[in-house]
Length: 207
Ligand SMILES: N[C@@H](CCC(=O)N[C@@H](CS)C(=O)NCC(=O)O)C(=O)O
Image (cartoon, rainbow, N blue to C red):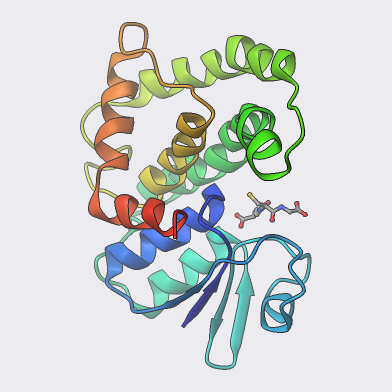
C-alpha cells in the first residue's frame, strides 16, 4: 500500500495514525498537494492530500481511506459498531475537518507555512484574531465532551484521531491549549499526541 502526502497535513496524519494503530505496512510518499506525480494524481482527482494506492485500487480523502482500512483490516477497530457510537464518531470526524481544522489552518498557514516554507510574511493579525475568537468556542465544546481518555465509548478511535490531528498544526503555529481554561482538553491533546502512532506520524514529517 502506498500513502501519498506530506504528514505536515492533518489529513495525511490521520491516515498514517490509523495505519500505525492497525499495524498495516505501507510505503509513504510525502508529496505536497497538487504535486505532478502521476501515481498521486491518479489517486487524487482534485490533487488534495492524502491519497492511497492499494494494488490497483486508488482513493483520496482521509475519511474514505480510513473507512477502507477499517473494512479491509477490522482489528483493532477504529470505528465503533453500534449505531449511536458509530454516528457520534463520524460527527467528531466531520467536526475535526469542517470546524476545527478549518480554523486551525489559518494560524498554521500564517505563522508556519508562509514564513518557513513559502518564505513570505504571514498575516499575524489574522492568525491572532482566529486564535482569540474562532478557536475558543471550539475548545469550549470539546472541553464539555471529554469524560475520560477517549472521545467516544471509552475506546480510542477515529474520533480521537480526527480531532487530535490538527492540534499538532496548532503547536507548530505556537498555540497550546491553556490548561487553566481547558484542563480536560489540554490533557487529552497531550496524551493523544504522545501515542506511538501519533509520534510516528509526526516524525514522518521531519524526514
Ligand atoms: N477532505 C479531505 C481534505 C484534504 C485536504 O484539504 N488536504 C489539503 C492539505 S491539508 C489539500 O490538499 N489542499 C489542497 C487544495 O485544497 O487544493 C481529507 O479528509 O483528506
